[in-house]
Length: 182
Image 1 (tube, rainbow, N blue to C red):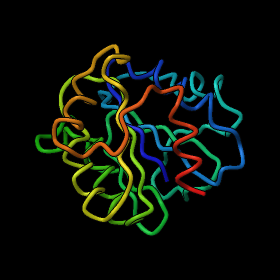
Image 2: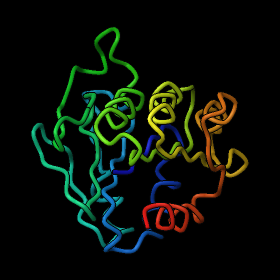
Image 3: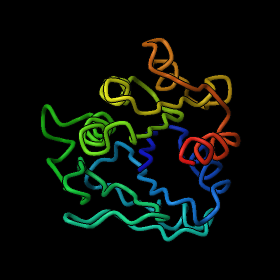
Image 4: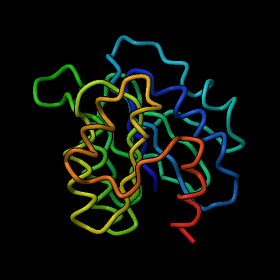
């Protein structure tokens, strides 16, 4: 399972990454953004135009399938438990405003050394604390090259914390992921 965290400017980076991943890799991709509950999202349609894999919005209890792309439901946190998604508290509730970290932490618990995360363009540091959990269990952490990110704060935070195993352009990420999984 590849967790993809992005914020501002991350849609273009995500479409570039997913557009380069061929079907049949056995990987599932989970796209996590911080979206307010009243925010209408077209992420399923947008990402679906750039990949041959099925793209679905996450529902509570949904089982994760290989060669699928999943998109966070606006206004929620999401975690993994026994191979299924669990929708959590609203991101508007105090203490639940770090959906990327929340997902990465659960990915580390669930997948251990098979956990893979990608931090794309975005403001702030969401994703860095979750990356610490992924590194602690031996997973892979990839940061978008900040020089190619529209908003470089999130990938820079991962790099400066020392958790990025790779710092690369989004168009080169698919090859790294495929080689790592094989």
